Length: 294
Image 1 (cartoon, rainbow, N blue to C red):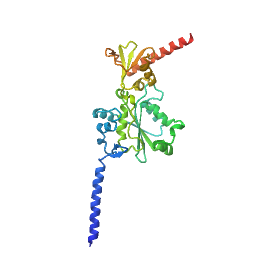
Image 2: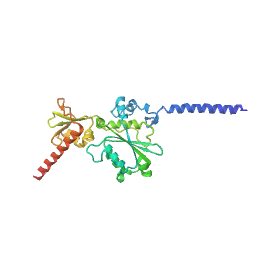
Image 3: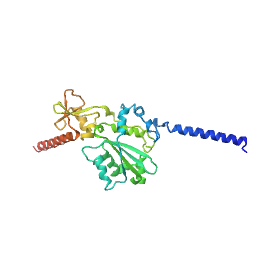
């Protein structure tokens, strides 16, 4: 026979259990507040919308529509077991290119700790160069900071796998990949990241144009100062210098932040434009070598 006291305790425990169950159900759909950011559990990706991303980035002067975000989310990732070997390394180079490639690939990479499921997301406008810093690092790279690098140093690369998301050509200029990074940073599984807000560059929204020497043919348009570097290998300092001093690039091109409405589009694909620039570089170097010998 259960006395009144025991019955009361059972009733309290039952009520408490029901409350906890309800609370648990609610917390699976409510965000965690992390340093002022809403961070959702890994099972609640449907809550991470463009609206949530734009709230986080409200002070960065950038935004994304849900349609644009959906396009980024449809980019398929490629997963590699670590460490790389003679079979997987060529596959990586085929995906992201080699570190010194003239046409670096932009995107994000995700390290997943196999034992715990903890994740780290990182961005780069040159994935091959960034990954080289991990796998062929200098001593300063493994300085004890953050959470990922000390864990790699302690357990080795075999404790992780690596997933690569490469931006397609039409999305590779500018910083579209940073929106994809921010999407993942709002997922609580990415707990090896110590920062939850992407550091968008101040020059994100500056439009830059590449014209012929007369300004009559428009070869390329990028919506950031670094956009030309991402796809054409033109260093951002060169771009800045051409804009500031109105100097010609390779004595053959105008790089400017001013739109010339009457200019006609060249209609070249990136490969064709890269070849044209490469030919102009060769010609420019030959001319300089000739004059230096005089």
